[in-house]
Length: 494
Image 1 (cartoon, rainbow, N blue to C red):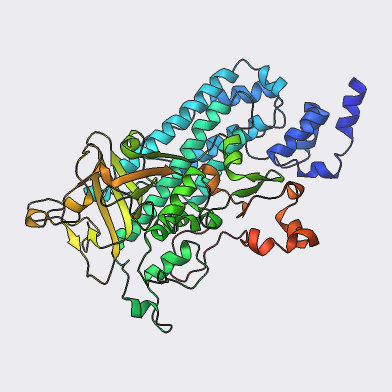
Image 2 (image 1 turned 30 degrees about the vertical axis):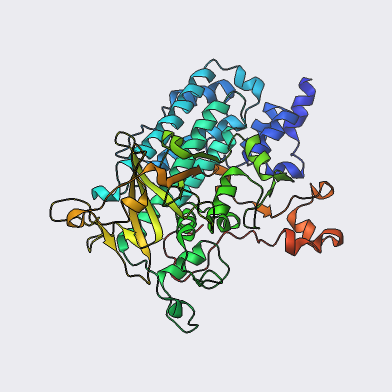
């Protein structure tokens, strides 16, 4: 046995092992050839972040357990530091076998510290967003770069593959989701504060020689393959509330392009969160992941990262910034669709039940002043604003989730005394949905179920095989690119 180990240390790894710089590759080498082989191989390579080639499992776990997680403070979030610490933990643990891990008596303490860190980070991000609402003239928290949020997401996902760390990984994954949602809200806040997002009349929209507007930018960043805003046919209706939400999910958090079309209609949004049978082709039902095609709902469930939603009065039980809201202005379903309007949660005050949303394509609400702060009346109340009949804009709205009687038609859509804004009740909130963390990963999707015989055929292979490529345009029309192509988009890309 010693001779076999010695030989494995002396010989160069076969060609596939050259990929072992990634945690999964190192783990595969370790399981097949043992720790000594990995240590010898790593000694000849630049060590990945978090890997100590000279250390054994006990010392590595002890090092991590002795290296305190970054302090989490909602008033001073340090996302790069948080991402770096979790990456160190996940990279290191992913390179150790289960037997090696269980040899360390420090493992339970490290698991608890990681789980506590994830919970605290999620709570801090949510609290920071809730306590920085634009209606309070607050400054949005610093949530780092998109690359930091992606690093945190990837580290949490890798941690989920480590035995005994599933609960810790789940807490960290939820923290990553809260962070990505928060970044999306910050983008929406920035657009609202600028006060330039306003539609024009139908004739202008259909003029091929018109100047571009920021609404065109919203349409492109929402994933539409045209050059900007279009009107709803055949009524030529100005309708872009869902595009505003999905554009900001992209701008702040790189929300997958192939999913953004699901925010183009209230029915599609409901189908998206419910994983319901689709009424259109805007909500993909199949996903390519881990070397095979899955049903989207089944794949999300397999990783414990399902989309969630709450309907009706119970929606107040769990609301956080970045959640998506479907609104019924009159408190009842309309003839045209399952709801009237799509909005994004800007903040939520659980103590008062005040839900603040940031919205596009609305004609009344709370507008920013020249200073980018919410307008107020001389007496200090939030000011009711209204745009022209032929236009819509980005507004902030408020609803009282503790008020089970009032609806929009009797409150916020009507100016209060002395131009005061009136908060409407919870009956106008029909659904509150939260995307899956997987929705922010880069995947290929299909609009229809993939036949069993093609289950393990990659999208690229399917486009080249004679028996499947003929249906590609119908089943798989999407490209894998996540980039929006907009001259007005200057905030965040991939």
